Length: 376
Image 1 (tube, rainbow, N blue to C red):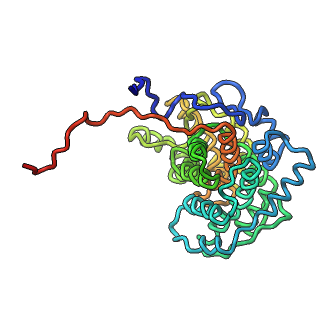
Image 2: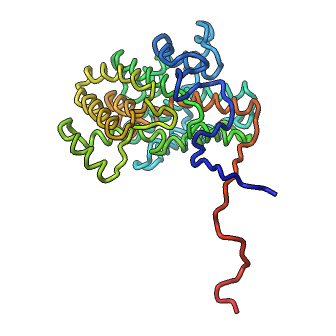
């Protein structure tokens, strides 16, 4: 007879469901990718180095990096059929919904979509890494009534994304900030979107289905969508002198103040200070210092009043806004990075797969007989 445990963990909080060799994310100790501290990776590596590390398990040699970069650049174009599909999306379509649908379409176009060998999935992971920026940029421009700008093979990952969105490459300070954010967003263990990808992969579905599910999870405001909501919140406040009253009203009305708290990093997210250093430089470059002033003041208040600390979304939302992107673009940019982590977790799940199938504790009505309403 099946028995239910009384020890239920809502949201699987604190439950260890599997092992991973990709990222160490714990309340104490360093945050690492494949054993390397994120501070060292940001200091010494490009996002492409880190993407290779997460996917292959080791940092690339110069020759390996050249081959990886060549392959990624060769895969950047998307099909005319996919561009036509993106053009048809309603103007009101959420950018994450566009991305979710387009990645699913990539799976329809790929005749090898159902090949779950590691080598095949590595190739598909590189394809998605290369094509998702093109999808996001194409959707961004079509939404604004502009013609899409094709990708360029001679530009770096960050340079090419700005080129496709705006037709130009920005200052090195801007590129450095984007590169840093992409490294920091690349993976964080079994977060909601990553777990969603692993659940789908555990059924032996294809990697495109797993990544589509992950994008759907990241879209939510309790996950990746929070970085866009942080900037909407700052825009609502408007000026530093309005912040104190706004916070008092928000706390009194139990309004969500986005960008604070983390399921793992309860005493502070180690990624925040790394990105904030770059955001301060960006704010000085783009005349956005009032926003960093507001963030510092709000962080002080939330620490003192609620014992809550900022998470990475709190800083990244402002970073992307200062780069010139619309607020709604923050979460898709997050996805451009996290696809590396999602893909690595899908492949890790498949190496020693067991169907992920938890049990729910039934709390509905007791067993009863069927009596139709109005029956004699």
